[in-house]
Length: 377
Ligand SMILES: [Zn+2]
Image 1: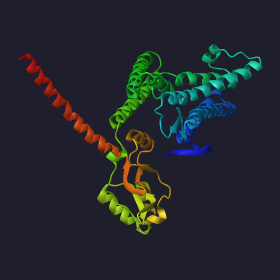
Image 2: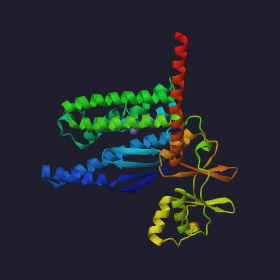
Image 3: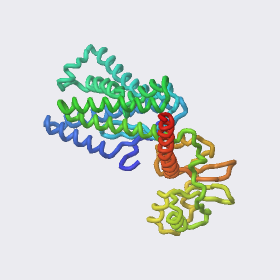
């Protein structure tokens, strides 16, 4: 993760905090400290923001733990100043699973808000929304209201919010998954337009949120288009079958030369015809800049690498690869390496398919017009 600091790990999921988050913390501390003229105020403000973001991490772990129930790993959770993002290994195609995973996060936020409400209630305090809206309410009440707000905001039926996924999953239970995605994206973009109009008249922050929602919906619709285009295709149809391979004893300078000649990014390392490692473009550039070209592939290669069968469905593979752009999977057939597949290879296949598809409407158009002509005669 670039520009982020690892702060912990739980159940195989690493939590990273983006450096801009620390900038936000410092900024909040300084602003609050200056405004109220005390160090205590600054400490309280920073403490509150940190606690709030811990709640956001718990929300993300809600998604992660539910995903685990369906055998989906969450690689990492990244905290930005505007919230958290959990990177699931893949998005499930089964609507009921996506629904439960999407709902699990807001459920955690509601749970936290309810627990805080109970704590306040036991102390004989009745939190009032009007007081919160006015500004000055104590720590626990503020945390309760913001967690409730987080759940509500995340349930807005628009991508990239959880509510967008809830909507898609509900639609996909009745109609085709791709149609459901397109429809959910449209609804989200409609909502974004509404936000922008209301925001322009009231609060500029809403316009920024509208932009963010619009882009999220467009991104999701784009992904659905690609998945639709890949439907029915297998890894076989996209994989690169002509590629350079290295031996463990080869100097990495040889890989650099091959990278130029083959436009290939990842190099399998073979010993007696069996794959023993993988040298990625990232490793290659790193080692070349550190040690020159003399290191051997066997010294710097990854010994763990991901493989895939040639008959696997390509849309699922695309989902997996789009989480980690730049990565290539080794395509195996009966224990033998037969190809490489990464996003580049899938993009090439799509380009060819699109070109072919573009030809078809004109052919059909000619047919239609000929039929029409025949009919009028
Ligand atoms: Zn969420």
